[in-house]
Image (cartoon, rainbow, N blue to C red; front, top):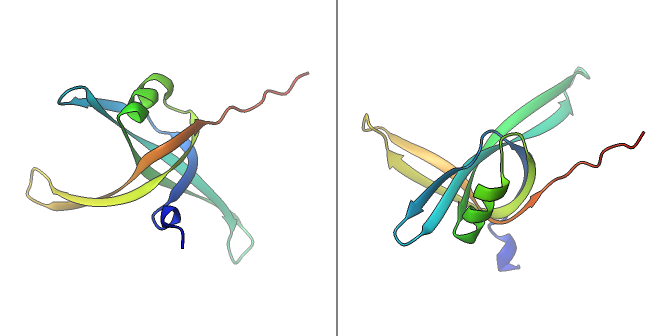
Length: 116
């Protein structure tokens, strides 16, 4: 099996906010943003339902700089990356678990306008 597909995530969704960008050490940047994906399906009764999922995206280095310059709330993007799970302790001492997609490739989706 190809190693590249063992931990591979592909998502298309809409940005819920502008990216939050941080700089570490000697100009190492990280950008964080969430996107919403939507699944539309029929239930057993034939009724249509929409289910929205939120996904945390992380951009590092040059990708973070690109995200900072190009991404704005509401924009539709396609990303490819790898899934990372981590945990941390919050201010109350409770362990929290987070899943994030570390983005390797990103593309902004531009809808073609209909000419009259």
